[in-house]
Each structure stands twice: as structure tokens, then as C-alpha cells.
Length: 318
Image (cartoon, rainbow, N blue to C red; front, side, top):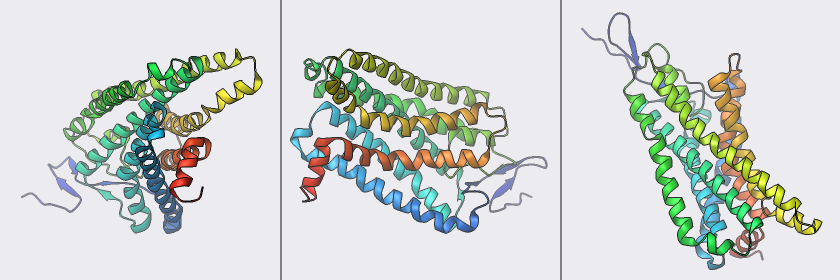
């Protein structure tokens, strides 16, 4: 006779299948989770309205209907997706100590997380090309990056990002999960979930590595674009003009650093870290989820004069 338990169901005498995964807060600081939830909640409440404000201002201001701001809209949508699909789970853990999540919900969350992460990576690459083109050939900028061309680029990479991570939930769903049910983060990650599987998951490992490598290639192309940007700027004779040219990319540089530094660190620790610190991995993963959606609208509102003025105008503070 088969005996069912609320968390696990016994398949045979030697194997136990997990029917619930358990996420984790910050080990050792469980007593302070309620207090930790306060800044997380505040960051969430700033990130969502902040990115919505960016989208609203660009949508309603005809003067902002330009390639640079279309890319900024894509960035805001990616940040909203990351926040909406992952942060509520984190808040549930810290506020209510509700750590359980069903496998299907976990697979869906990791799909959307990696989908929006790949979208944001692609948008940051677009924006580096936008900066490079604006500095290298400002006279032909508007003729090369037309609104129609930007829309096509966005649509292609939107579909590409989704198709790239679409196999994740289906390949993970086919695996059996046994013995271990405690994940190592506050939200579901592909590389974290696949380690819970009983059978050999070599295919999942290498495909996940391929997806991570493809996203890291975006960071390499961004770095190459900034090499050319610096080369172009150094060729400008006027010191004032060269600083002005670099200042046009300041917001993008901040967005690139806040996005890629945590995710490269986390991916490296997951794939290659032999003596990795669980606390460090949890903190880096939480920083990656919290900081970019919070900082991007703040940085672009402060550093981009047109956005700054339009936002103040909408708030009646101009």
C-alpha cells in the first residue's frame, strides 16, 4: 500500500520523490528575517513605480520617441519582469517564513527569471551599440537607428531570449527529484534546481552552461564596444567634448556594472567554485535581484537630462 506524506511520496523502498522544494532566506539570521524584509519591501516599492514611471514618461512624451529611449523602455520592462516574478517569493520567505514552493511553480519562476535576465542582457548590448554609434557617427545616427529598425531588433531578441530558455522548465520537469529538497537561494535558479535531480542531468548542465555562456558573450561584446568608444573619445581634441561624449554613456556603464558583476560572480561560483561560501552566494543572488531594478530608474532619472526634466514635469516640480 502506498503511504502519502504532505511533502514527499514514497516510490519504492530505496527512492523518495520530492513534491515540494524549500527556498532559503539568510542562514543564521532567521531571527532577523522580519527586519530584513523592511528594506527589501522598500526596494520593491521603489523599483516597481520607478520603472513604471520611466515607461509612462517615454510613452506620453513625443520628444522621447527615439531609439535611446526605446532601449530604456525595454530595460525597464526587463527590470519589471525580474521584480514581479521573483521578489514576491523573497518577501514571502522573509515576512511569513513561507519557504515551500511546488516544483511546477519553481520551474515557471526559473523560466521567467532566466528569460528576463537574458532580455536585459540583450538590451544592455543594444544600448552599448547605441552609445558607440552616437559617439562615432552622430550625423548618421538617426538614419541608421530608425524606430522601425529598433522595433525589429527588440522583437527578434525578445523571441530569441524566450526560445533560448524555453527548454529549461520542460527538461527539469522530466527529471525525478529525491533525497534533497532544500534549494540554496531565495528564488528558483536553473543551476540550483537541477542539482536536486536523482538521475544524471549532464544534458541540463551543458545546456545551462551554453545559455550562461551566450549571455556572457553579451558582456564581452559590450566590453569590446567600450574599447572602441574610448578609442573614439581619445581621438577628440577638446577635453570638454570628450568628457561630454563619455557622460552620455555614464548611465549605461552603471547599469552594466550592477547587472553583470553579481551575475558573473554567481555563475562562476555555481559552475566552478569548489569551496564556495553559501552565505556569499545567497547575498550575491539577492543583490542581483534587488539592485538593478532599483538602481536603473534612479540612475537614468538623475543622469539623463531629458528623462530628469520630463519626470519632474509630470510630478509638477519643474
